[in-house]
Picture 1 (cartoon, one colour):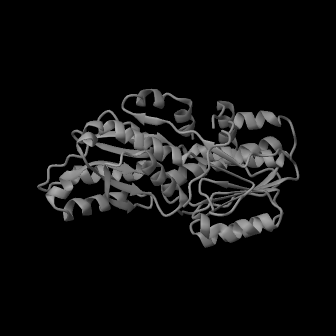
Picture 2 (cartoon, rainbow, N blue to C red; picture 1 turned 60 degrees about the vertical axis):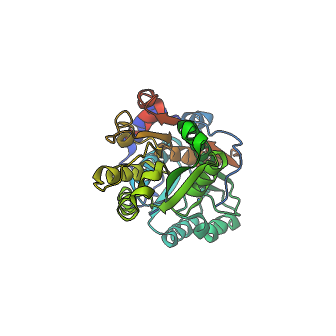
Picture 3 (cartoon, rainbow, N blue to C red; picture 1 turned 180 degrees about the horizontal axis):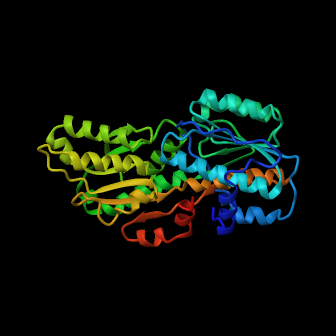
Length: 366
């Protein structure tokens, strides 16, 4: 998932141009994982590797379809920008046609898949809003003999040509280990109470929760779990409700919060800062996922006394790799059946290095 700066510049120049052959992207609207993914078979190559593999090869007459959720929160909004930029750059480079569509609901997304299928594509890249609700649409693609690449969220019991996603199991497992080390002394004395803030009902939160439970010490007790819809405001309201309705003893028992995303993490911090009740808060660790600029810039000073922060990288630019896999299909290449994209832990000890990394620079290059 490493991008060459030259590719980014090409993409930036072509952002206002239609795809070669005349199929133009649809305008963006606004959307939104339960078995774990198998172990990683291979790591996805960077787009520069994908591009150089077929350097100079014309794909004129080929057609690629890309369907994503709409921009309902920061991660999807950033992802759509990266996806559009990548497909436009690749289409300009290789001469293929494409259709890029977003949808706010699963039914709309199914219709988008049907629309693209009617255009006789050579491959479709699908980022399902909710995997199971896209099962019929995905099956229709396969029944038509069109290669299908699934990005980010699994469709249970369905095997596409290839799926590519961030390593959610690893995020959960390593979070559990991090919590174990952070609360080592407390765990030796007995139970440690936590809250959990998930994203939604898709396979992503389930993988992260299952991974956490796999490695977390049995003395951790999750007092309450929330589905945030990946929203900062929702998480703030949920945390405020907890702080305003529970007894001081219940509130003071919470030592850590396992949060599945950086945006809800900020909402939780908002609620903690706004709390003016009688309980003496003792929340010492709050986790996230994403590596967003707005989050990591406060890792050395959270603004809440005694609160440490950490996250795992999960860049919106990962979707570029899914687009590149689609291009490889157009080139006649055979894909692995799945690719897990790497993730790294970021906390106050390494945040400066992370903000200088190629991954971070690529993410915020657009």
